[in-house]
Structure formats: C-alpha cells, structure tokens
Image (tube, rainbow, N blue to C red):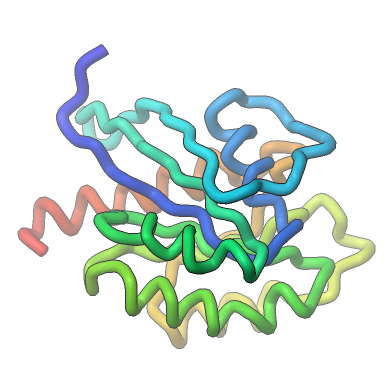
Length: 175
C-alpha cells in the first residue's frame, strides 16, 4: 500500500502504564490483558489518513524500566511524535512525567509533537490524578493532552491521529 509520508512515533513513560497495550489496541484493535513488560523496544506500524494523505506511522514502544533507559534513548532520534503516557490511577507515574519530558525535549528535535496520555481512564473509581491537573501540566508545557483507555479503546485512535494531524500541520507550515 502506498503512502505519502512516514511519521516515526515513540511511546514513553513509566513501566506498567500501558504503553504496549496502547500500541496493541491501535495496531491490532484489541486489548492485550496481560501485556508482558517490554524488554528494550517493541515496534508496530499502521497506515492512517490525514487530510486525504496516507501516512504510515512507525511506532516504537520503549521499555519504562530505568535500566533500559540508555537503550531506549537512542530511539528518540528522528521521532516526529512522542506519546508520553502515565496511569491515572498511579500518581507516581504522573510525578515522573517531567523527567520523561526532559528526555523527550533533549533527545528529539524542537518540532517533535508531544502528546500526553492519561491511560486507564476506564478505572475512574481508582483515579489518583485529576483530569484538570494533567490538562494544566500539558498546557504549561505545550503538549496535546487526552485521557484514554487501552482496555476499552476509548480515545486510543484519537491519540495517534491528533499527533499525526499536528505533525502534518507543521509540515504544511514548513516547520
């Protein structure tokens, strides 16, 4: 199948926030209940359409474990988009976002589109991070933001598409 562009994405965030499940939900349209922890890096692709253009997304899902950080850092280079994921039921994963953001900003180019994703939105009863505070963090740092659920599929499609639209827009604007 032909396409006009290839966008490279990376998915970053703490271990166990559901990065692999988001990738799987997006590429396979199904929920993997027991995603094994990613060792190093996983890879997935899917072709989407933005403004009538076919775009191939190459998605690198990185390990959240600290000891893989050195390995996964090499995958940031050339990323057009970064999905930075935390778990809305685990505040620690939210508290670590600034460290992930620093990596993303330092290791990608200034025009890389970063989208913040609060995963596990289906677990409302166990929520530990409010939508409002995460939205504010996103606004202060110039990030796109949405909450999603890899389990129900809610907003998963949107997360990948919103980032692609913004990247495509940047290309049109010449940035």
